Image 1 (tube, rainbow, N blue to C red):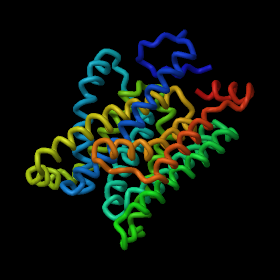
Image 2 (image 1 turned 135 degrees about the vertical axis):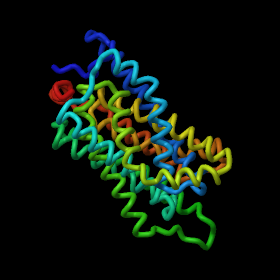
Image 3 (image 1 turned 60 degrees about the vertical axis):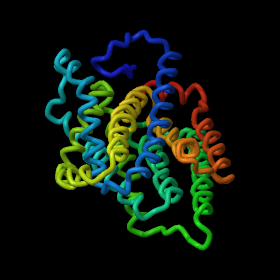
Image 4 (image 1 turned 180 degrees about the horizontal axis):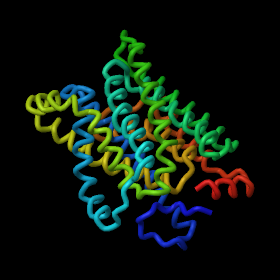
Length: 325
């Protein structure tokens, strides 16, 4: 069985399975909370930054932060991608760190939060299907059942969000915004599948840093726009951009990659169904936005659905999962 520990880490090969599971769960929790906080952060500073400049600012800050961690490791191990090893890194760097963020930021200018959450959460279903086909993770019954239950929870959250709109107003589902959200979901799903094999060769922080650098380079055309908007933006918005670069980008994408190196892609993607519910909770605590009853019920349904995806399907399934890591 191939080791799930990325090359260059100090974790011994005899690490107990229970400890590996605990580390993976901890990484997933950090990722969900920080990605959820990103929606709140983007909502707060969105009026001051355009989609492209916001993406470039986040990625530039994240690249600097991760360089502090990754560069000493690179100098010591000299572990760099060679030849064709760059192709998947370039692919998910362009699609996920660049394209996904720009598309999502643009979509949220014309879509309400509930609709955006519902559309983006097509992503885990796409990941589960592609992981079953391309990563040979199969189609375990409880993963499919749990994903459908969790998706129903997200639909309740989205519907509750639309009902919370100002009386007399209907949330606008601009077709361009819908298409951008679906594009973002597809780009993220494909990127997860591409990134999974890379994490068998490179540590999570290194694989994330390379992708962030690629994404930042793709967004260089927005540099002038970012400079102008930084000059005009209030200090709170600038600090919000710094937060987005450090926590939801540098840290959360690294913990995601680490968890992905330990957990099947389909199961890990299903945990992102918890992001909308967590976003509602953070908005409630920080912005004073009281969630709707449907939003709270939807959050509980998401928890149940994600719990179902963690159920094991039997000895045969466990053996297949172990062999795929």
